[in-house]
Image (cartoon, rainbow, N blue to C red):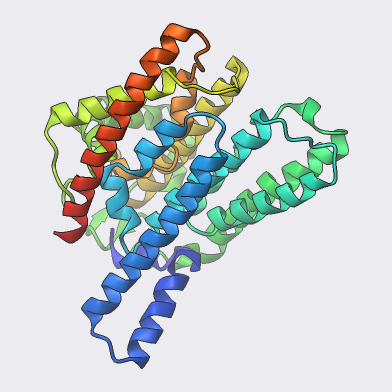
Length: 355
């Protein structure tokens, strides 16, 4: 991505980096030292918030742990980009909404307002990292209506945890869209090509759907599947395809064989899947009008790492908490396999972070 587009991002993900740079200037540190300090601090922030996300989420604990510790994910977590905070805040928002939906949280008491305040701060922070992911707050609709004392409380919670973050994202995009200096009337000066305009989306929605289909079923779609595990193929470690396949197999098993006291119903699963598709559609639209040259039949700019923050939403559809004894015995064996696989992941990730 060109540097011209980075200036359109909200400043929140870069506050710690800016502070480290200022301290580095004051102490006369070299640029290399400052970069590594930024990466270490971002990794510590990512690790801390991920811990609370896994602790809070009532289901898919192992699946979330695996996603959080994939080599490509940890590479981004230990980078100086905004991807680290984006991923971990997405994990936390998903975890908090699922906890509010499935746990025995009494929304009729005054204590719930403290919980809603925490969720409000978290969703607001997410909307100020990468605005597209603010749509994850639509996960509010996964909360059963009967958990609220009345409709007024329901609307207040919706307003604070969903509507405000999305509204702020829209305001930010509209306010600072002029900073896309490399985009001028359908021309991308970074790629030096003409790109599709937003009016194309209005007048040719069916053609746009064809663009999405061509992107998914083509070679790019296969690349996204690999990049989701390994990270951007241009910068991170390339793993054998059998390893990538095994990662998806383990993710699927940990989603299906999930020991939990909570069960998510079909309606909630479909809501999670719908939000995954909505965020995916928003990402496609953004990349289409930003990076896709005229004449192309696929969408440019999409990367596998863009799916990491919403990965847990897709796994909801496979979640099936186990109750019988035989399945629990299998789960213990699976638990051991997950442990070994995490050791393997961490070894690869250490290699990637160092080299």
